[in-house]
Length: 235
Image (cartoon, rainbow, N blue to C red; front, side):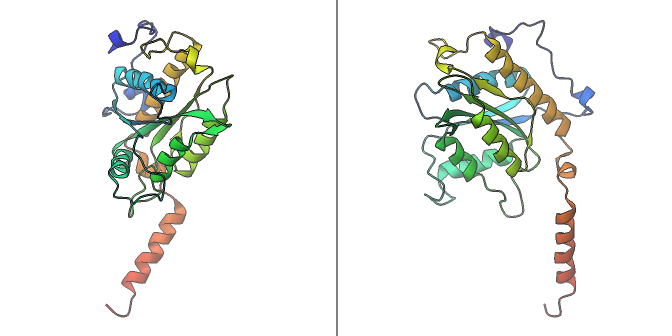
């Protein structure tokens, strides 16, 4: 994997020690990556591809969702093939990377549409609850943090564990070569930092998700439902 990471200093690139995070039985984290542009040369996609290379070098299993063909939320039924694909990936993964371009001071509509198609619950299952999340954005001009701030709000709403670090690439059109590979820079180093931190937090959470998101209010509600069922007069 390192042969595909020309910007990395091998001496500074440290493997993630899951044992030090209290996870001696760790398995390879499953990470879903989403990007927010359909342009042929999409810088949010290029960032996601760089992040995927790094994740694989750290030992993760990855999937990148291509949003092309995804209908607008409520513009199709939930059995649309792209919606089914996205929801299955959301259930499959242990964590996610979201990267959006900033447009009019906000995340792109394509980015928001993907998140809106991931429901808060499917039956009794919350597909995002307890999963880790890293947020990134690309900017056409000077550096901004509007998109990542909004993505953090959405991550909280989806009950995800969003890591502290984040990435915002200013003037993204200057940061990639003709082959779509990111040039060495402080922006690239920040992406490495984000990916490394996401891996650490995912190992930290792995196997503890259900306990971390176990809530008093839901236990009360579940107890009330159980009481109503066992005390019903008629069957």
